[in-house]
Image (cartoon, rainbow over all chains, first blue to last red; front, side, top):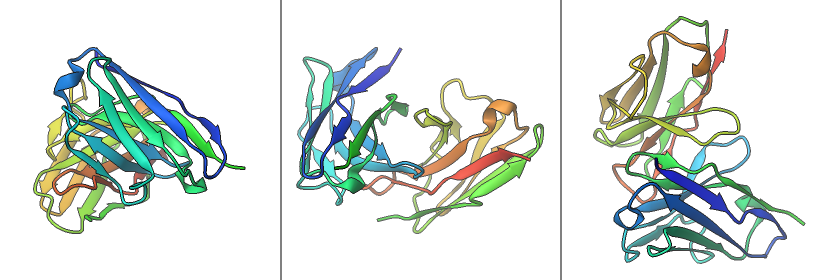
Length: 114
Length: 108
């Protein structure tokens, strides 16, 4: 069974940093592309970032480019999202997602507030 | 960036009735269109990909149709567990992946 479990969310002040992780299991992680998406309260999902299976190809949404960094460790079956210079508008539930098959984790809440 | 527009924003339907949800793309996405269902406090769940292919374990009462810029999700006979928010998402021209604003299906 495919499982994706996010962690690392919490309350952070504007301008602060947070690192999210996604632990993958139930499939050969190194063979699959992955995404981070987020969903602000009461809003629809928003794509944040993409990384291909080997980590060589990376894309970011305009809203996070230059502040967020996606990475993966295929040996540890882990996907990360380093988030710097956080803003109030980054407040959301963050999900990791495997596009092939449409698998999503349960999400981790990030709240940016003073 | 391809904009996705869903209508209506809210659909009031009685259990057992048919529900028809629409999604329009600002330019052609061919058949690279997915539908998701989301219930409160849960992650989105993939229902349909390729505009019309049901994902694993999705009941046959869910069907998708369309191509190009106009798409439809039909729920043939609404069950109590189907009351939720539904999103369409294009993956034809990305980045970015883009989602519609959602249609809330509520009990009439």
